[in-house]
Amino acid sequence: MEMTYAWLVVNGFIQSEKFMQIFAWLVRAAEKQGCYLEMKTNTELLPSLVMQEKMTLPAQRPDFVLFWDKDVRLAMLLEKNGFRLFNSAKSIEICDDKARTYLELLGCGIRMPETVIGPKTFLEQGYPDLDFVSGIEERLGYPMVVKECYGSFGQQVYLVKNRDEMSAVLKEIKNRPCLFQKYIAASRGHDIRIQMAGNQPVAAMHRYNEHDFRANITNGGSMEPYEPDEAQIQMAQKAVNKLGLDFAGVDILFGEDGEPVLCEVNSNAHFVNIWKCTGVDAGEAILKHCLNAVRESSS
Image 1 (cartoon, rainbow, N blue to C red):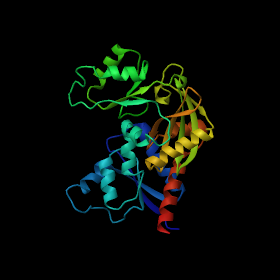
Image 2: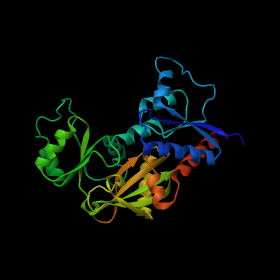
Image 3: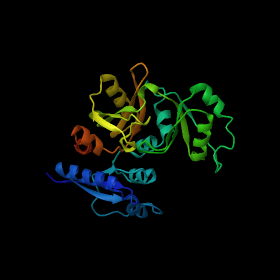
Image 4: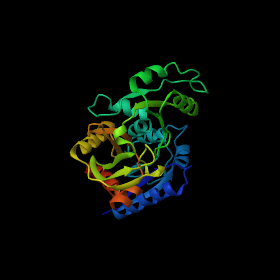
């Protein structure tokens, strides 16, 4: 069988060991399944796309693109030129913005924390007065969670307990988009990460941190293998279906009544920790899904 040729598109400005490990992992996972996955950067590809009606590309066109970046404009340009992306530009764009994710899933029967989207401001200092916060305080109460719309690894997420802390956080955020959410006390320092590929759960872990309201491993949390129940699996499946994702990491909280509450959906979640925790290689599952989808579409 002829080897499949694909691109792994990454960000040319990211050189950290953590990301490079993921990139190498995906290349190895592809090779195991008869696919040559060549790494391309956004800095390498964009000059051949802009200011032209047609792209200037290498002679060998990839069978698909594994898009492991958040450069949505590049993703859109590739799709405009007929490339099959995993995940799609639209799905990545929605997941990268927590407010967009919330709006897309609102009214779909997916339980989420009660949420207020922060009003847009054009001012460098953000919000010169906090009059609008009164309505949010009345609706959500303290403590509440404030999240910047763009952020990863549990960063840019704050727990505020009163107006003074709210003021300090909003001064830190300035004019960056944010949202406010009701605090789920029952899930303090605990959540579930379900790795999905092709709408199926690949692996899951319980993350916990006794010293932080965030359970993320990056913030000092611990992890253990977890067997999600049917309600948690269905929530993850419904979320990835609605967002049009081929693969994702779905984070779920424990509700006050024991029922699952969706926290976030990550379009290109790092999976080394879930492998360390469960022994399951999510990279192989992701590549298998991509290859199966491409082969089915060409048959």
